[in-house]
Amino acid sequence: MKRKIKKTKRQSSKRTFKDSLFREIYGGKDERSKRWLLSLYNALSGKNHTNIEDLKITTIENVLYVKMKNDLSFLLDSQMNLFEHQSTINPNMPLRGLIYFVQIYQNEISKNKKDIYRSTLIKIPSPRFVVFYNGSVEQPDIVKYKLSDAFEIQDDSGEFEWTATVININPGHNETLSKNCKSLYHYCSFVNRVKASIKSGMTHQDAINEAVKYAIKENFLEGFFKEHRMNIDLLTEFDQEDYDRNRREEGYEMGVHDTSLATTKNLLALNKLSDEEIAQCCSLSLEDVLALKSELVSEK
Image (cartoon, rainbow, N blue to C red):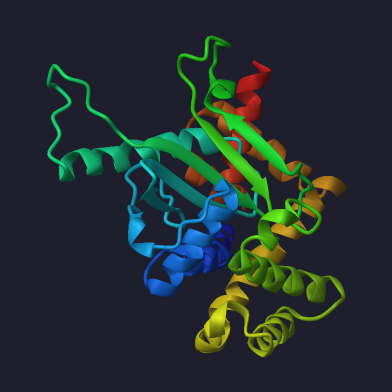
């Protein structure tokens, strides 16, 4: 059992690069990144902002309770935007987004020295939560997850709602979006090239190397890949995570992991271990455990 936990820890250390690649591109850390982020916002909103100074980056690096280090948030047009990349399906995104937004609003209220106990109404930016999905499980162009879907008692009043809009950026989905946003097109082209090479039998390392060389040749993202060529090990980690997850998903379809899933459900029913501990014991991701936990709740 200890060996299995150690293996899971090594796997978890490789889980973040595809997400961090997305965030590295759109995180707004420099002028170029802000331009890319602004172009992505314009493509989504149908607007034509050109001044990067209009962007106010509000990303929180470490979020209490729910770690969402790969999110990026920004304020524009009196709207608080939260963008995230996901390569797995997670119906708990509305709850995660709600928790994240609460802390963003707390920060904004504190910075602007607003008093929520005063007798007049405090105005806040309207929220917008978008998740860009490019996982291997087939999904519609757009999926809207609602917080009310998680309520133990059904509530159709709409009085307490929070929505995560998931946009599929895989080939054949929302292609107008990538056509209208050159940086997103380059990002998707790079990721899809890696996937295609692996599927054709190329090793992970060779697939990454080939995709990086192609991206450099085509001048993807204004030389971004040439600048980050020395980070090839990180790129390999991104690919390994994707490969491991695809193997796991294929295993689900073939029934290979039935025993592991059954064990996970039994441990969840016992309610003796934390979700993180169960994930380690069963060699599953925390997201998989939470998904199973949600299934058990819905079955009751």
